[in-house]
Image (cartoon, rainbow, N blue to C red; front, top):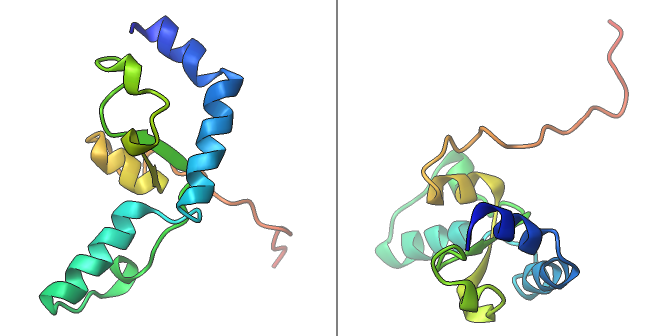
Length: 110
């Protein structure tokens, strides 16, 4: 699958429906964060700071990349819900590069 075909796939209604289905299946929780906490408990380690929280999943990651395995693009076993930070880590990008900033409800005027 080339870039043009991948873009067409990600814009399709079929993918958008599957994405929402997978996020719902995982209760909008990042599965990498959940695994990190589970592994820490099993190992008896105490996590501190932001490592102790399960972030909200906003992205669905293909375990086997669709460019290499397009036949697995919509398979539930090949999809996992991740936060933006964890998704960036899986793709070896800066974890905070593509994080959307929340706008303030009202601007401070002090």
